[in-house]
Image 1 (cartoon, helix red, strand yellow):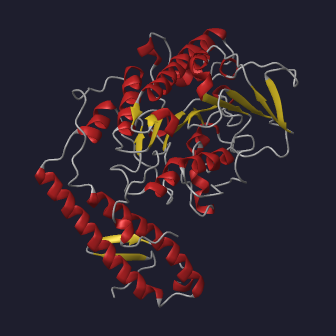
Image 2 (spheres, one colour):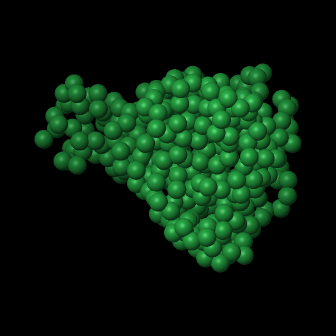
Image 3 (tube, rainbow, N blue to C red):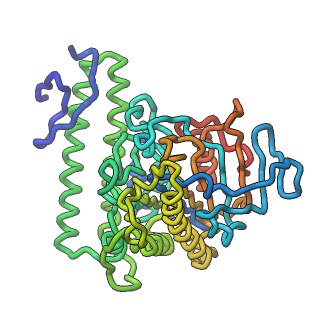
Length: 444
């Protein structure tokens, strides 16, 4: 065995794989069956789409306005600290949601209990900031990546992560793996179209197969060296090494699944490849391509981040999006911000309508798809991450309501409880996710 340094690395085929620190030196195990694509059942496919806005929504014009009377005909006291409202009167920015009111649930009063303003937005789908990932058993894995583990190999793409690589904090940070790594986004409709529909020529396919083979060889050597290293560790560090090697096994599983799809043809393109323009103009097309990805079963899970590169000038609105979100209570800036947000909600509404009108052999896609729309920012003007804007459409569950949680209630659930409920709706057998305490009260 090659010698190891104080930095604790395993070396194989000229590649160094870093290890955690071991004091004695100074859990899904993939089977052969898991390497094969699983056969499809007879049930409708479950799908999930998560859409995040980096700068939130102006609260006064986003949240539905409701009667203060708890015993009104459109209000039900579900439990202490939770009221269910019907017949919602949407605000100026969320007005278009009235078109799809019977297909969605709006949720107020929930968050992750985090602080940090812009530096906590990336925890929207995880409930865990990246700097705190090392304290969690599955780091800051996000809802989409957690769900993808249950459908490994059933589609060409386990997930599609879409967003810009420019803007605030260097681009999209919506999706994170169980090892605490950011999932790089597909940056525009042109790249997304090519990912979904443009085939790979034989030379590139051969090169891809060779790359996968090389990586497998490297991982084999890493395992061999790790087993040798294990003999020199105490019991505590052996457990630590086993946890680390779990992430290596995840890589092996992804490589095996990728190999299975190399020779499977992609669906026929429904139109010519588009060109990237700007996020304002591209947003409807990105939504359309997500619908196509779900309809062709290229994936069953997608995320889309509407980031800081959303330029109001492309909507005919003067000013920067980030600057307008810090409106300082100036009405002129608020009006501009609400116009930006209204456009974004209108495109989400259009997306939900398109899912409802697009069918596969089991019926409308919307009935099979849970769509989460919201933000990790509650109020950008005050840099707060509380009372996050949340809308869940589709999924075939209860809808046409506002679930209003009392922010002051001592037993107020964390937002991650909603994620447990969504994961169960997706078909994942779990009763926990990140900081959750169970399923979401009032959801079922």
